[in-house]
Length: 171
Image 1 (cartoon, rainbow, N blue to C red):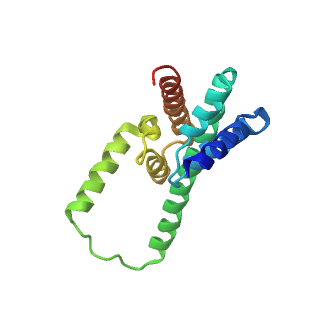
Image 2 (spheres, rainbow, N blue to C red):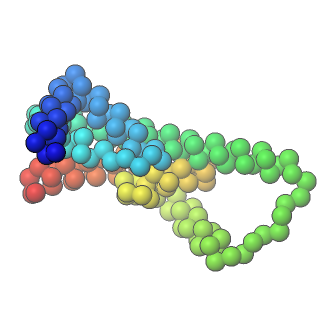
Image 3 (cartoon, rainbow, N blue to C red):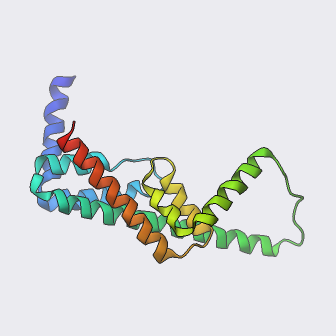
């Protein structure tokens, strides 16, 4: 099986490395991976840079922009969800009694922590498994979009820079 898989992988990597495909592919993958879909963009960035080292900074910047725009989409989804739930709640004449479970208290503490940090919490948007929902929660909490985007971009840029550099020069 490996005998035929290796040439296919090499062809795919060569196609992705073409400047007319490579950067747009990195942008698309980085954008999609910043939404709530489970996908990583680092292999695409690394593959492009490995085959075209002169595209290092372009790939880092394109991936950062794509991933940040995807984070902004997650922010808007959180903001929209909050707005929709507020509408539903305002229509109800009465609310059900509060459930004070351990899980609810943990969620409340997490929300309080995020509110305390404010948009700076979006620096952590690069974290796998946590970062994408963090952007949506920032929107849910109606944190300022511009400030959140600024911190998202810093975190995501540093992630791509460090991860790609480590993959290229250390491993």
